[in-house]
Length: 246
Picture 1 (tube, one colour):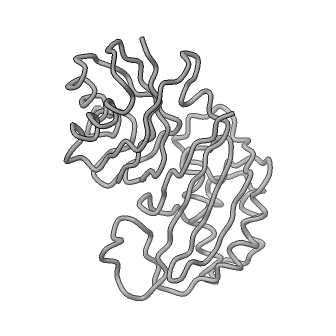
Picture 2: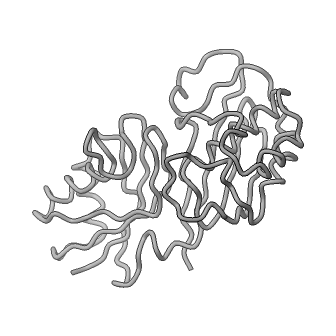
């Protein structure tokens, strides 16, 4: 068996998430079905993250084990041909050691959240960013975000369906910047709780719109109570950017 590491880019709009689902299409199912058509094998795709329905990826790292003797470039080309018309692309493929694991070897994950901050509705970027019409103060959002950086109990900012045993996580970076008509939120950590990024973004949007004082972010964190959450941002503005490995 040979272990192949894949880098995936995908539009999450038509999928029920990355992981295989019993009730709808998933990125995992599409890739595994394409692999079966190419090799005749029922390989299992393992990935660095578990994106929700509607969440996108620029550089999701995954791996599969295959018995077929095939060069990485040929596998990448064949996958891209067989994945059509699904909005999934394999942008890199390489052979890795048998003990390398896309999820368990990963030491860091990076996300980007895009807010389209303009009055006009979205056309080209519909379902690719969260449309917020009222002006946002990105500098105030960034200042408030720094209260979340570091090691904290993020109970307030995780889904009630989160299966993590411990709500304590270390957030390495939470940076907010304006890029023209967009506000970008960059988040980096070893791992995240379910809905953590979207929950943090939702509350920061309230700060940017003037509905929350900057200090309220720290207060919500200290509450360690999901009822203290102000808003959960929609999934379509969220992108898995990269996975980090030693």
